[in-house]
Image 1 (cartoon, rainbow, N blue to C red):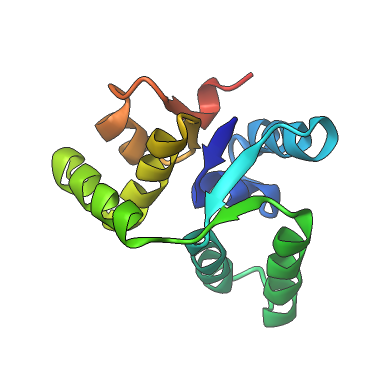
Image 2: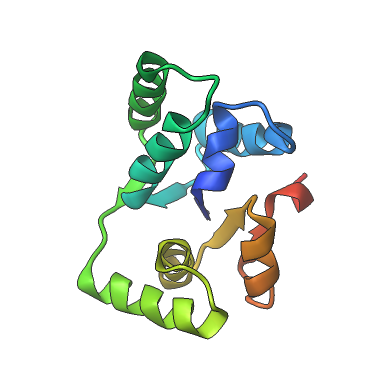
Length: 137
């Protein structure tokens, strides 16, 4: 049971370092039914990241976002209590509220949180549920 952030899911669609590890997580969800949860914010973050990828045209970005919706990841809507928890995490670890939302969600669900964002990992790795994509096998 896991929460993935945009840095991981981006690698499902764009070949980069550690894409193979990211695809293993996608296969865990698609083929093995491993419960995988994301906040609704992820769709906007992914669309924005892809929009600024110089190798992707608008139509491809739209198709990619459609594909992510079609995968059927469990999506959690942001609530006032989740936002307050994210604010606490953001202040405690000196990270953005956007990033903290994923951590707050994972903490509340008692799931592991996986990121490919090295800076975010370094700032939060003392939390037992935070994992770095590169370390996933």
